[in-house]
Structure formats: structure tokens, C-alpha cells
Length: 301
Image (cartoon, one colour):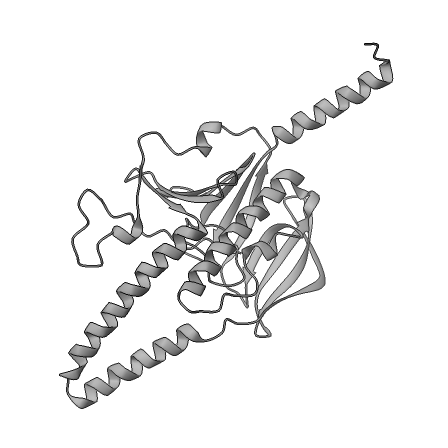
């Protein structure tokens, strides 16, 4: 088959672009200030259809695999990992709800023998707890402003996130071209997955899920800084790398075992046979609301 020079150029250009998409990698490093006595760093790495996120120096990190629609919470100290999917969250929350109801029934029996003043105090506390759980989440709104800044050589526009019309944080968002388009889409996909898991968790508890989640901050571009208002903690992008990442860093480490959190012993109890407790990971953030699934710490978005 004869291929003229123009066709050859087009084929070469197409091949190069396809290779570029296939090999696109992004590593985002955020410096988090005001969350602890010392600054900390959180790293988000995007490699093909996988996203790894964790705090530097922590034993725990998360790994999202889009092909399996699964979030793994991996503990390198205990050599265990938790698998999280919407179905697994529903199963776990059913068990947690059953355990909570059993606890409440036991507490009511104990309260029956309490002096009346103590019993009334406990009843009031239980009522307040139930009302707090059933209260609707705050209405979240993102207002764009005319303010702009430059962070790591990239211009970003500031938007103010409001909860029930009260400003809670400012977010400086660069355009979607601040990073590889494929990797940006995967970043949004991971946060959308986290939002869906959080929604399943809240619904299982009879709580209305928030209208906006983590993904809403990233759909329009890359969040370069998230500042709690008026002068609270902040997360700011301190480095963006496009160097190739290692496949091995995006796989479950060899020899690690699955850990099911609902089989763990309750506080003060004995662990289930053959299991060892996994330290509770901190909440992942980039989220305008506090409802996010268990995962290692991330920029407080």
C-alpha cells in the first residue's frame, strides 16, 4: 500500500498523541497548613485509570481503580487493605445500624433503673443526637468572584463556598488545561466515586446526603488552594509533576490481606480471631461538606 508523505505525517502525529494520552501521568503535591502543629504534605498521583492519594509519612493511603470501580484503603503497617464500593458500604452500614440499635436498646434498659434526673438527662441527649443525624445538610453554593491569583506559575480564579449562605472557604481554581485532560478527568472521576460512596453511607443512616460533594470543586479545573474562612487551615499546591510514575505504586502490595472493618471488635472488646485492627484513617478532603468515605488525609478541599 502506497502512503504519501502527508498521510505518513498524519499517522505519526496521531500515534504520538495516542502514546501521550496512554502515558500521561500527573503528581500533585499539596502543602496543608493549620491542621496540625507542623505543616504536612499530601500527594495525589494519577496513572492511567488509577489514582493514589495519601499524606507523606503516613502508613495509610488510598488507591482508586476505575476499571474495578473500587477504592482501596491500604495500611502498610498492618499489611492489610479495605475494599470500598457502594454495595459494600450499604452492607457495612446495615450492620452498623443493627449494632447501633442494639446498643440503644441496651442503654434504654439501663436507663430504666436510673434515678429520674439522670434518666431524663440521657433521654434528652439521645433525642438531640437523633435530631442532629436527621437534620438536613447545609445548602452548599459556590459563588465565583473577580479575584485572581498566581500559584506555582498558574493563574487561578477565586470562588467562595457558602454553607447556608455563610462563607466557609475560598477556592482558587486554575483552568482545566492546568494539567493533562485525561488525568484531570480521572481525578474528577475518583472524587465522583467518593461522593457516591458518601451518599450511600448517609442514606443508609437515614440522613439526606449533601447536594454537592468533592467532585464539584474539580469539574471546572484544578484547585490550587483551598482556604478555610475567615483565617482557618489551608491546602495549597506546592508542586505539579508530569514525570512517568511506577506501575507498582498503583497495585495492591504483594502479601497484603483484605480487612473487613465490620468484623473488627468494638472499642474495648477483643479483636476477631485472625484479624488485627486497622488504625482509623482520617477523612479525605477536597469536599465542600464533611461527608466523605474513610480514606487517608488529602488536601482539605
